Length: 199
Image (cartoon, rainbow, N blue to C red; front, side, top):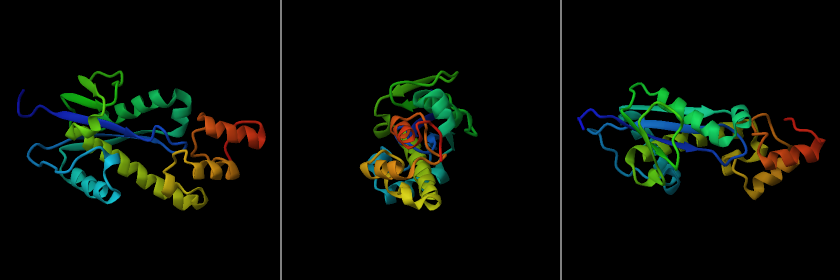
């Protein structure tokens, strides 16, 4: 393996939420600029994640964010939308990798040499970096959505179906940013109007 053999790590955030994009990131780290403290983004404090995010953006050889929006999620289903978002993230890298390591148990159908690694976000530095970039990006988008719709509490639950979120959703109905194909959203739409459409 030559010194310039480039490995990209890929991870996603946001398969479970009822609202917003599923966000993926691809990161190629610079072996000459090691970043200490990388780990699964869910195991890091928000403060630590934000610090590492800045360090990754500054020091990585290349990074890219990919996404699939709620309409694509509704059309394709969440699994296929996530695979599409992963493809977009890797294709968006300014340097194309020789090999891609993907968190989870499957890789997208693509032309890259790749490997899926279960719990790779806690064991592979490149995937850890990708998980941090994806999570910080999506959390910030949920904070922005909260400014638009403060009554939903997106800054707290980040769109995940917590008890508080489901109560608000039942009371207020979904906005256009919701994933209409997700069961809790469909149930609310049917209860409210007997048909499926966004407010």
